[in-house]
Length: 518
Ligand SMILES: *[C@@H]1O[C@H](CO)[C@@H](O)[C@H](O)[C@H]1NC(C)=O
Ligand SMILES: *[C@@H]1O[C@H](CO)[C@@H](O)[C@H](O)[C@H]1NC(C)=O
Ligand SMILES: *[C@@H]1O[C@H](CO)[C@@H](O)[C@H](O)[C@H]1NC(C)=O
Ligand SMILES: *[C@@H]1O[C@H](CO)[C@@H](O)[C@H](O)[C@H]1NC(C)=O
Ligand SMILES: *[C@@H]1O[C@H](CO)[C@@H](O)[C@H](O)[C@H]1NC(C)=O
Ligand SMILES: *[C@@H]1O[C@H](CO)[C@@H](O)[C@H](O)[C@H]1NC(C)=O
Ligand SMILES: *[C@@H]1O[C@H](CO)[C@@H](O)[C@H](O)[C@H]1NC(C)=O
Ligand SMILES: *[C@@H]1O[C@H](CO)[C@@H](O)[C@H](O)[C@H]1NC(C)=O
Image (cartoon, rainbow, N blue to C red):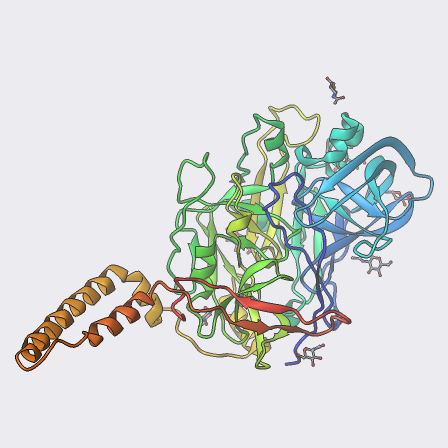
């Protein structure tokens, strides 16, 4: 199979007023284009086809006063911005700034008539942003998150500043208050369609979404304005709801104080993130035992990430509402056409360890690599500006699109190849770690026996001459101590093709004192 080229650079991505350490990774990539041979679904009212930019960004076309813009879809933020001028637009005299975890935008708040997914909205408020090297004219971003987070709404301080979906839902109260999103997968020739976003409609063939368990949107404490802005589309994973490649549940604990069962992680569904962000012990359970896996640091990939062979199939599953949502192994590890310093083609664990992203409001951010495995339904309920708060609670439904395990497996082998490994047989290092008490016990016993032996020798030697240094004991002590000591970290080159003019990125192996490979 031909490796795909990818040029990587960070682009902005949204998480307004989120704690600044909450990293949101947006990669925009250019793989060598593969023709998207078919668009499976006929266009229906309320549906808009998505463009899949090499699995790292999904965008849709809108017009403002007739001018076309290609805007990234983002369930993690709530404002619309476009780069460049819109003919005949009106200036409100206010400005807004949206701070994303990576980058940000600011500019005057304008209004113009919007055409989005077949809906016409008059005088939609948006931020007009000036083009620069990261923002090209004709592009933008549409925030599909709860309106609490809207900076435009705040600046205008009335419903004229409502985000797009609130406008759609309030202008015609017969339009059902929900959106659905289906993301395609560019790498997989058998699933080669870009994606769809619908408003108030379910895609034909996916009607079963409405009989899936309804997951309550877990609410952040709305007592403070700051917290309101951190309300995302988020829900609770089941207890034992993170299943690693060995088929066993990963032991997890939430950092969200208000969650009553600490074994339930809070997950944000965010189409603006390429790589899902998970607690580091979850990423380690997924990838740490894969032969050749290394925890690396790449600036381009925003911190620690597991690097591993591309042909190893890593099967993981998440559970919501008692239903299993398996992840396609093509999404569990991601192919960025990268080679290490030895010239080996390497892939990355898409579920990125990101303890730095931990927020008081959630544990996990499910970006695109998760979302490609489900059909996502978000019912806004009374999360619409101006709706009576008694209307209904918002909820989320997920329909697995990765349920055919044998198809996923043969697909993976066809695309990536098959390097066998046994996820249930643990490496010595893992064993040592999970049996640390035993190891220490044995070491101490061995040490005592050795001391005994040495003393015996000493006593015996004493009979003839002066005592020697107990060299055996010293060397044993040193090797025992190495269980804790990190080795000096090694540097690896990661050669990303197609990054014209840019220096080759250098990855740093993550110095993890508990890593068995040291
Ligand atoms: C992938 O990277 C290799 C070098 O590592 C390069 O030769 C190749 O052209 C790249 N693939 C594509 C499709 O650009
Ligand atoms: C958006 O518009 C451009 C130009 O008209 C077109 O080439 C592209 O296919 C459209 N994308 C989608 C997702 O409809
Ligand atoms: C929206 O406006 C366009 C022209 O601007 C028109 O062709 C289309 O029919 C309108 N759609 C609806 C649903 O009113
Ligand atoms: C926003 O509007 C409300 C009334 O709807 C008013 O009480 C409040 O003072 C306004 N806030 C600002 C900052 O103008
Ligand atoms: C309002 O929405 C309903 C349901 O989507 C649709 O049938 C109706 O035509 C819409 N009315 C207007 C005026 O757009
Ligand atoms: C829809 O769900 C029902 C019950 O959950 C199931 O019996 C049926 O086979 C499903 N249909 C499809 C097309 O998956
Ligand atoms: C992954 O799952 C597939 C389908 O169940 C299975 O055939 C394959 O052996 C699994 N691979 C590993 C490494 O567990
Ligand atoms: C799973 O996919 C295979 C093709 O790879 C197909 O033959 C089989 O019918 C599918 N199974 C189900 C339950 O859809």
